[in-house]
Length: 193
Image (cartoon, rainbow, N blue to C red; front, side, top):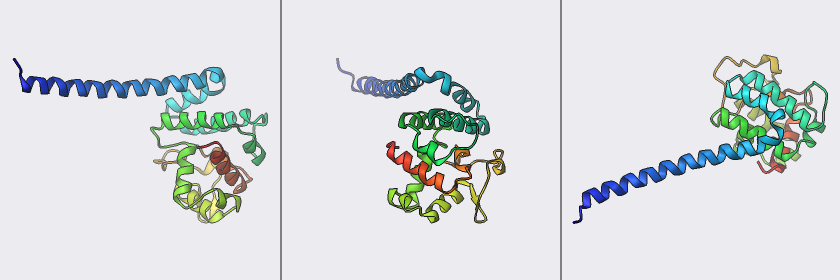
């Protein structure tokens, strides 16, 4: 005997279970991929991951710059230079971006910043032309550029609700601004972000 209501209910429940299973499987695959990428460099990214997981954004921001300098082969404990950025490898920037996006629930990360830059009309051509107008507008949206000047890192208020995309920011506070910002955004595009 056929019971259409029961069959429909069972089919509906199976569909729900399949959807739930697919979502969980997708999350596990993402976590596995992150772990696979971090495994060879767990010593390099472990501290950053822990800072991000605990929501310690300011410390994570400074640690991000340290990791970037290490990847670029810079043993100085100072701000990033344009040369550091050009030596920065694609896989490293992807790992940093993935960590920031994961632990901020897609509020922060380099790819978020690049997406915002594109949204303001920025592209590789405007970067190569060193178009500061678009860069300044990005800085205003992120809270890095106020009253026609770029803020220093110690001027950022990490206690207020932070704008989407505003972190990581430490590497942007270089005395080489705005050149370093142009170099960094170009590097993100070159890395396929």
